[in-house]
Amino acid sequence: MDSAAMTDGFHLVIDALKLNGIDTIYGVAGIPITDLLRLAQQEGIRYIGFRHEQSAANAAAIAGYLTKKPGVCMTVSGPGFLNGMVALANATTNCFPMILISGSSDRAIIDLEQGDYEELDQMNAAKAYAKASFRVNRPQDIGIGLARAIHAAVSGRPGGVYLDLTAEVLGSTLDVETAKKSLIKPVDPAPSQIPSQESVKRAVELLASAQRPLIILGKGAAYAQADQAIRTFVESTRIPFLPMSMAKGLLPDSHPQSAAAARSYAIGQADVVVLVGARLNWLLSHGKGPLWSDATQYVQIDIAPTEIDSNRAIAAPIVGDIQSSVEALLAEIKPNQIQPSPEWLQGISERKDKNVRRMAERLNADPQPMNFSSALRVVRDVLSDRPDIYVVNEGANTLDFARNIIDMSEPRKRLDTGTWGIMGIGMGYAVGAAVQSGQPVVAIEGDSAFGFSGMEIETICRYRLPVVIVVLNNGGIYRGDPVGSSPSPTGFVHDARYDKLIEAFGGTGYHVETSASLEKALKEAIERGTPALINCVIDSSAGTESGHIQSLNPKSGLKK
Ligand code: ADP
Ligand code: MG
Image (tube, rainbow, N blue to C red):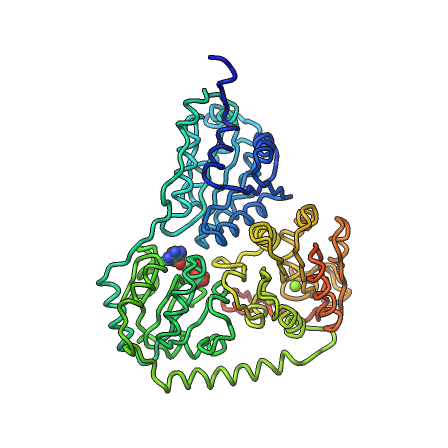
């Protein structure tokens, strides 16, 4: 056969990605994928190169969450692959669709453990942490491999998928005709899943009997992009709602039916709770006491049938996709059939007012040095007329405070540590959100959290992304060490100047010690729309160990 009619694994991978509308790849270059990335760029795919695979894969994961299409990350073999695995596992845990594609070394050597460069049985290593894990061993299977990866990533409950490409497959040739025929574009890989009519009826009957109903919206609901149906469901039933952290903004936090400021009361007193794409995991105290009452009954809408009864008995499960399920509920509910009692609405509203008043006192104080509340009040005020801005948020206290203080008014704009409470997603999510949306991002980072992905400020500067990072700097994990003491397990360098880091790469650094200078810096940085980092000094004694989840932090009898 004449060589002009031949192609190879490299080209086939790119052809398969393009056929499936994948226009962006996140990754880190190296053996054996460097040429693959060059070819991708040459073929018009946007390539975003990172400094560490974990951030690249986090960017792909958040792109998947925002678009409902699998985000794609490419890494080298062995350690590069493993660096990406934390993010792949995190994506799976959070139900974000992504595909991690790694090159791998010689299988013949790997399988006999003869010691190849970056030797690792990647496909099997990934299986425990991914929704699915596949290996392509022949170039004519590249198309099938990608199709299977796409189906696995986006169908049902979305998740992270690993696709192993051996160096051999990338380099092997195939005739163009066979190659062309081998490619697949999946038809409807995330089909609607219509719930049974019976399950919908059962749920409506339960809701109609409720005096104190409550809707809890999770990030599954945000992911589903069923924004209008959900809003209609909430507003037409007049049921109070609580957003989980990444569901904030699905309905604006300022919505009169939001029970967020009366969370414990609402959860503790509700008689029927509708879970919409939210799991009864640790973030909801597993549905158990002391937060929850034993008498509470649940409607749970989820695409994963095995989620039902995972922590508590669910009286009325609705297994289906959220758009179809909420539409089915709306079709079934008769006018005025659901009536939250006036006492219930009144009770929530009284608690809300009281808590909002109490919080306002803390927010309006202007201590010197700043603390979490006073610094975040400034950030809140600056962001309040910029609903277009994505907010990335990680840290311990920085997360707890920002989640409560910073209101969201648009869906899928708040990206945070999610189901695991993982640290290190910050810069990866910031890059992913900025690249995918073209919109500005403000990343609100604890100084410790920032450190996990901090080197990606070079990536942010290289691509000139509109990302502003606010580091709430109290000099440590939870808080800083006293001046002059030797480093404790939680302390960092005193008076660290994170702002100088970004200057090394051509970004703008700000060092602020007062609320007025924070306000000025943040406004200016957002206005400029170019990479910036604000080193926001707060009281080194501000912050509680483990933030709001101290109950999960075991203590020894250690003297302090
Ligand atoms: P949160 O942390 O906000 O409570 P979780 O990640 O715990 O949210 O829950 C999300 C749930 O949403 C998961 O159980 C997942 O199966 C479900 N889910 C994801 N996408 C959809 C969808 N399109 N339709 C229905 N359920 C979905
Ligand atoms: Mg800190």
